[in-house]
Length: 455
Image (cartoon, rainbow, N blue to C red; front, side, top):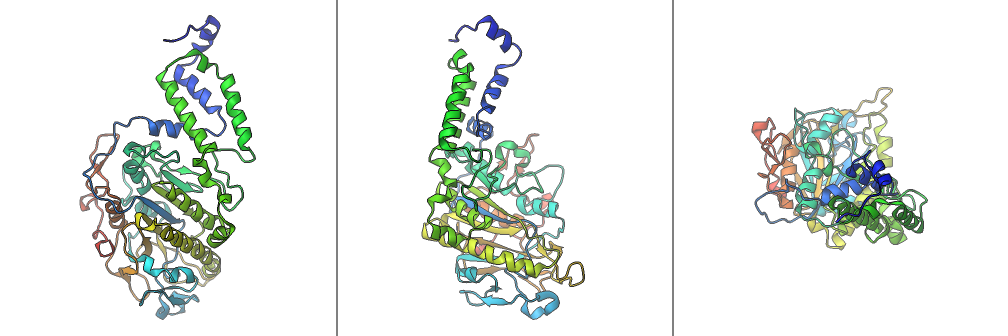
């Protein structure tokens, strides 16, 4: 039953649809910019994932995205015998696994080499940021269709449509979107990541779009109460399905803002020594937030880590960036293991490509490296991946893969298998095309096989 609407109210209501009125009501709520995502995600999905049941070893993925492309020779594939034109001034150091060496600026990770495996045979041959990022994130080459990223696919198979009940969105990016490509592709905006914005190294860490900076919890509650007093639509309609769904979304959003779920972003709850161990940098504190998100069951978290497009003065930049990376990543691995989360969480470190093995010492580069997609390194840990292994090898100068090449689609297929995602399952395409989650050689992708040696 609906209450009678007075003529004056009806005259106003005739100018807009009920749906528009509901939206106008909703968007006035401070901090509810995530409401639309919650509504669409909570609604029944006719395209809910269908696949053969597979036993999963992993429940979640942490992607550490090295935006810009890190140098493989200056991180996980050093070439000390190649001479100064290639190796540069940074030296390799031994790790706690015999025969594996990494850069001297990663001493903490060197003590944990038994926890991760290095893939030195990564290759796709593309040197453009946009295209290479797309290939690494989707396993596909650009074409007429825009394919979804790994994060969007995991959100499809492990998110709301698959029974995820968390108030925190299932696909999070810290802190800004990666850009370069559309993360959700043809799956649509429902599967885009929720980018937190803000800076977790600041106190408080203000998650943009959830609550405005400087707005206290009490002030947020007062805003909610005032909104309800002003919202005459509630008084006009009873038991309206659309309005009920909006009320539920509002409740979930406020739970995220004011309830226990939102406290995942409050790093003041952590001890100072823990925060110090990660490093009081944006990256270090992003690693800490990520651990907290994984503890709460979020299936996919990306740390977007910029600053690796080092065309000039690369070694000065590496001396700043690598210790920061070493501290944050090593502490993340340590805490995941101590808390019993590493076995069920894949940690995936990668950029869109490597950097040119031969160093450009001429001005204005003064020791720089360009883009390089023919050979580069990635790193995986946890979630069913073995540690203490090296997959593939580059030649003596790091210029080409000489042993066990790995295309991004090979690595993605391996991660899906560990997550229990059937690589023969299909994705819903807006034009009804049959699209499997992993391409085949028929799609023009040169694949070399899943990483069975470390699974």
